[in-house]
Image 1: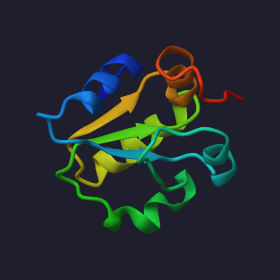
Image 2: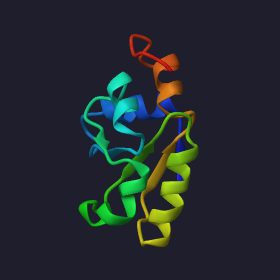
Image 3: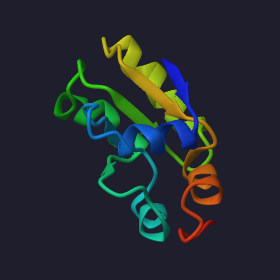
Image 4: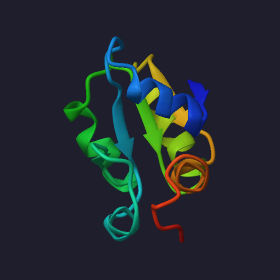
Amino acid sequence: MGQISPEQLRSWLEDATRAQPVLLDVREPWEHRICHIPNSLLMPMRTIPARQTELDPEADTVLICHHGSRSMQVGIFLERSGFKRLYNLSGGVDAWARRVEPTEATY
């Protein structure tokens, strides 16, 4: 699993020549309501084992949580399940809001 900074993710999302990643937000719904990256898929961490078949193991997938810890744990689980193109958002949505999208709320 790779790490991706908020700035690198912003560049990727803005690059129309590059296939867009799945933005997998593993936080709880109440957290997602406060702030989120547009077009992210909400799949709380506790639901991943039951819902992983909804994900494409061949797709570039960026894992997102509040600060990067839960998403790292989900990434380790998905790697063990055969996913290969995983990227953990360093600093999570908090770093995204502070460094890329300052209009987003933080908590």
